[in-house]
Length: 403
Image (cartoon, rainbow, N blue to C red; front, top):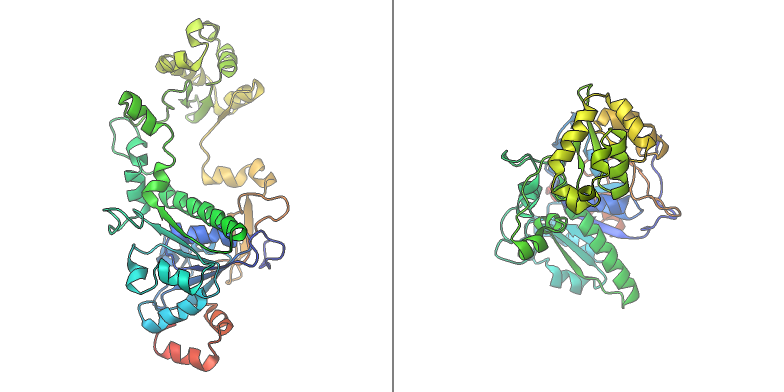
């Protein structure tokens, strides 16, 4: 059982991060920093807080997702639409290391809190800005969610079956990729700050660009050959054989038989030495041109066997294989358990809750799952007191709806 822990001997201990984000991309980036010891001060509007508190499955009025996305954070309520609220935010930023925000571009500038102003206030501050289209360009003012970034970045065009509507990959991958780029940028800026005079810089992360950065050889293939990659379902175009194959017991097995030696071993296993020894299939460029023939031969074999037997045979001869895990498979899997990838936290209600463990795994300064997602405004008094706002002043702020 994971209890609340301090942040001693953690990689990011001592860093103060102010998070202005809502929902996924910005808050996910802050979550990752908080898991390695950074103090995360999450600013939320007093009238309801981050909408993620009410997303997907809920218990006792709070999203279960909240306890993953907002773990290890401090919740401070602050009305940033009020000038008094913004003055308090500036006091928090005066000695902060990192600001993460995912407002629509121009919002902070309209509040006189753009990069130039904040850099002058606190030269060491690193400002991380996550938006749909970036801080510049003709689309900068458009509202942008992860799904739009996935579409413009090229992923939604490729994802799905040929001739069918584009599909979602199942999670908010555009937001999550943007959060990872935001963290990479933050760590790069921290390293530069530490080595070159202590100055912060501004990091501009766009949802569509984060997806676009994953698009492999899409651009050079089009530039050189005019080739437009199309949806391919479960196939891996140009790399064969790699696909999902039906089994006798109504399941699917994923087989990656695309290495030259692996291919020959696979063909021997399924009784197709004629294909394995054929000169034209000796290397991937020959196999890719006849992927359909190879897939048919493999599925003819898998359809005569059950999934468990197929996997045992493939593992035995060193062919990469697996099957699509449901969440029930994940929870039951011994490798997940051995790697301690599922942890259990205590909720304020007294109940326990299984949550994903922290990644990546560091040998000397590992991350930690500490407190569950905080109640709205749970840390307002603590944080405001730390910047000199006394109890009487806080009482007045509450009466005026600022906190």
